[in-house]
Length: 637
Image 1 (cartoon, helix red, strand yellow):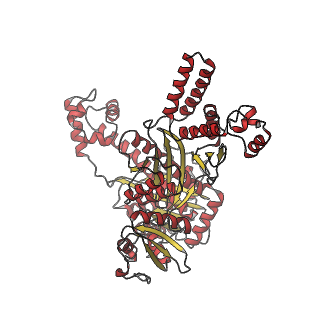
Image 2 (cartoon, one colour; image 1 turned 180 degrees about the vertical axis):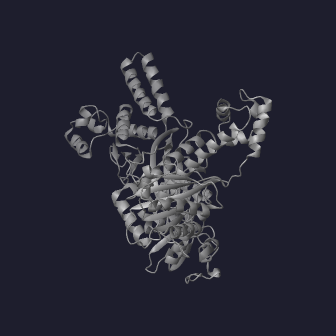
Image 3 (cartoon, one colour; image 1 turned 30 degrees about the vertical axis):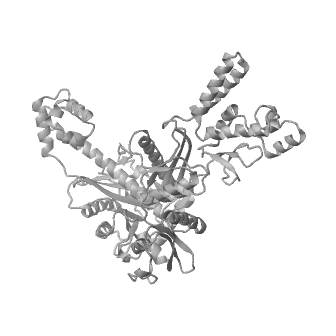
């Protein structure tokens, strides 16, 4: 492959102005759209030597056949043009959005003569004002039922409204008190419109104004002994309080904001969007994003904000994000044009906002795990993944049993390895194994040792397990030899190792030395998610949306989790053993020490005076503990 792209423009041809650029393939299809404050500086990054580019970026520029750009007057103009072109061309190498599901919204049809409130998943009703999204349909209906008690606006269908207005007879929902529109024959169109305006203002965050006004009217009516009117105001207040009670106050009551929490890996991200109005969470949405080329968190935030507000009617005063994009100032101008007033984009640093960002991020992390798990647990997806792996790795049969190995250690100490097993694309936790490695020189030597020990069981007539068998975090007791099934003796069709070329070559050497070259082996390098085969100079690149890559990622992540879990247990036992060597320090005092400091790391860094503060520890014993731990201090990485 040539190191210089044939369509690379001469440096002097590219302007230094702000603008938007497009990469196209040989058929003219737009592959990628991006913006830049300085086109020459940005495009030069894509035309660097190919070997220095991120693998997925290299795939994009080598797929492209041409690049073109459009100069614009300002950075804000480039942002607007980029958004328009991404919507128009839907480029395959830009981030792709995929909602976990279609969320229900509450919509008020402001374009109608007598607006009504409905539950809908349609985002394109002309003139409608949307609130939400809500996680469940019943949550929207419940909110509407409570809201129409305080703001009795129209809920009946358009056909019922038209029939009622033509005949002069109330619509059926109006007859039973479920519709408060003009079709109920209780209010005029003008009075109903004012009620709708109040409804929308309340849902947009005007909580305090309405509660204060209703309470004032209720007290005035009660003082005037108009108890019927006071009772109506009381019922409206009760309805409003019920709505507010459904969502806790998470920020100051005057805060209108949107908060985006993001969890991501190399290939995908999940955005958790909290809609906050009047200090309360009024809507929640999780959106999955598939990443085609390498993109930073800040650039991802840029794309997320553009998508969230490109066609939005409701832009809040503040937008909270996990990282500020480079063009945050231009984004604020862009949002101000849509809102009509100033909009602030900020990263929460402390207090309630930072706590809420952590909550959103945790939810995003869980959603990302669910997204990846669903893809590997679905039968059709699993079958496709195994077939794709067979083709990509040149195997004669699909790898129905895959074993993945990972090495974990702390600065060269407490070296352990894990083996996780997937059969038919699903984990078999009863067949997980963990290995202790007493002596080793490096990770490749550790991998070689572990695989030789594992492969030795393939040649035994009966399984003779001498390793630790772990299922999640519990040690599984061994069955008597007469009843034991030869699980460990089942040969895998594929061995997967966590690592690149060095680890794969060590694994291949172990297979040759064990006399089992028929077993396929590959490695997955985490930085670029490349698949390495033994004896190959270049990796296999699986499509980032492929089921096969998701399966290998799941195996790698599960092996890493399993290895870390076992290694932490080893460390915990190790520090207990080390402390037990201190004269005068028994099991009860060791337990109190670890409970007081909360972690082994904190105890290791504690001064004798701090250790002496623990009940039952005197100055001499504290000094002995400090000296002993200092002499056994491990290096970490």
